[in-house]
Amino acid sequence: MTQQIVLVTGASQGIGRAISICLAQAGFDLALNDLQHSASLDSLCAEIEAMGRKTFKALFDVSDLSAHTPALVDIEEHLGPLTTLVNNAGVGVMRRGDPLEVQADSFDRCIAVNAKGPFFLTQAFAKRILARAERDRSAVYSVINITSSNATAVSIPRAEYCASKAAAAMISKCFAARLGQEGILVYDVQPGLIATPMTAPMIDEYQARAANGLCLLPRVGQPDEVGKVVASLATHCLPYTTGHVISVDGGMLIPRF
Image (cartoon, rainbow, N blue to C red; front, top):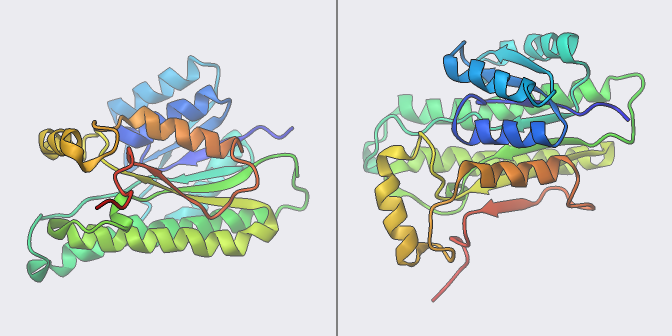
C-alpha cells in the first residue's frame, strides 16, 4: 500500500500541531508548513521523527498562490507523492469591533489566508493527484479543511473572520462535489471553543460561557481532540462519507430553546 503522506498547513502550534502529532501516530509521514523556521516547528519535527515518521519543513505563505505548486513539488521530491492535505492555517481579525467599522485590510487578510489560500492549494493538490499516470487506488486521498463554528454562528466583533470561514465551508462542499468521482474525499472540520494560542486572550471568558451552558459538554475543547477527529477522517474511519461537516464543538451549535 502507498505510504500516506500529508501536508498540514499552519502546523507549528495549536490545532495544527495537535493534528500533526495525531497523524504521525496514525502512521503518516508529514510535510509541516509554516511561514518560517521556528523553535516550535523544530521541536514538532523532532517529536514526530522520534515516532519513526519522516518530516519535511514546508516553509511558504498559503496566501501566496504562486508558492503552492513549487512547495508541493518540493515536498514530493523529499517525501514522496502526497495523499492528504489538511488546510489548517488561519488568521483572526486584526481588530475586534463593530462590523460597521471593519476595514478592508483585515477583511482581505482573513479572506486571503482562510479562504482563498485553501481554495487554490486544494486545487493544486488535486491536480497533482489526477495527473499521476498510476495511482494506488488502495490509498486514502483526502482534503480536510479546518474551518470554524463561526462558519455558521455569528460573532459580531469578528465579522470578517466569520465571512472567511463561511466561504471556506462552501469551498469544502464545492470540492467534495467535484472530487468525489475522482476518489478524493473532502471534509469540513469546524472547531468550536478550543484552547489555542489564538483563543488565549479570550479563554477565561470562553471557559465561563462553556460551563454556563453555551456548550452541551460544559468545557473548552483541547487541540488533540480536533487532531483525533482529523486522523479518523484521514484514515477513512468514517467510510462512505464525503462533504460532511464535522463539528468539534461540544454540542455548541445544537439548536435549543
